[in-house]
Image 1 (spheres, protein in one colour):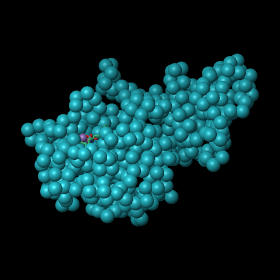
Image 2 (cartoon, protein in one colour):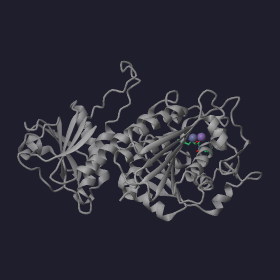
Image 3 (cartoon, protein in one colour):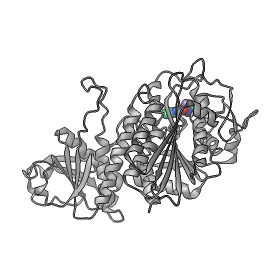
Image 4 (tube, protein in one colour):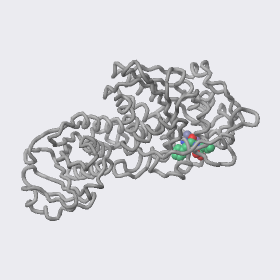
Length: 482
Ligand code: BES
Ligand code: MN
Ligand code: ZN
């Protein structure tokens, strides 16, 4: 999907569908207002009426609600509403008459959000429908044109990159585990590095992982006999001086639970246990495409979590990359074991601050549902920056606490740590407290996206994958590169 700005009269727009927003108390301008059917237009948020003024052929009037209540997030929602209307008339090009921004909101932020909403909403995953020859059909939404007299082309470009990158992450999330293996993700990382001069990639295979002493990744991957693990490191040099931001994404390409096997109902959805990695990969791609001025070190620990004759067993003791020992009381708490090594690796590669994204606990779904990801951090400044980027992106986070009493739960009897407690207390915080042991004294923020990576039902994402994290990371990187 391409997005761009134009500055022409409404009657000169030739998109398949032109969208016009209507705030409460406002009236449609002429000649639109006297077009047949225009009297049915309503300002109720998300309401829609299509009218046929001749030039342009079709206009959808979409209700925006009260102007003072309008937000970028609402713009994302009506961006999706417009895309669905475009799809109904089988169009591929959408134009927006940019609505006036309410006080305190940049017009560019509204424009970007309209593009994002439309772009996300157009995502389809159809390569496995027969007749598609294993190829993804070309996207039904080809262009979003923002008609405005304001100088906001740069923000419209951000909207385009965010939407396309988010959708690329959603594509990776959707791929089944027999396709999206650790090596497949490594291939995507190489593709990103090949496409951008400022990005380099390094991929470690099983032997290298074992040799490096990444005991967590080694242990979790032992059950996968023919699917090999990978430790993928992408580096983006956008500045070459100043802060190096570390990003770590959980990339379990299928989580059966291992010997502590999960119930079969719903297990197929565990192909999405690489959502954190998908978000990090595509965020790096987006950051490179926007040529942002900061450095990134991104690490994806990737493996399947399988039960087998060679699998990790409950009670096994492992040594993580930083030397800490862990008794693995539950092989289904695998994410923290591979993230532990990846965080240490990321810090050793030079990251000054660390952010990890992981579909880590079912408990976060119970606590926060699909509306907020959990944020856990050892640093108030970083936590505030992440929360701010979350608000701007609509990928919301809610901070949960750390406390020594939670830390006590993670201590082992015969080892430094245990990876899961029988008590099941504060499951999401437990996991965060465990991870904190591997942050090498760096400021660190952990995002548990198990509830927000899939099936949020939000207007512009619908069911299935969301690419949660791509937009948030791009928003943060844009802020840090200022
Ligand atoms: N990948 C799962 C968490 C998950 C649950 C992701 C639901 C997406 C949707 C994770 O590896 C896991 O199995 N966590 C366990 C931890 C427990 C054994 C301490 C959980 O949450 O049940
Ligand atoms: Mn698990
Ligand atoms: Zn998992």
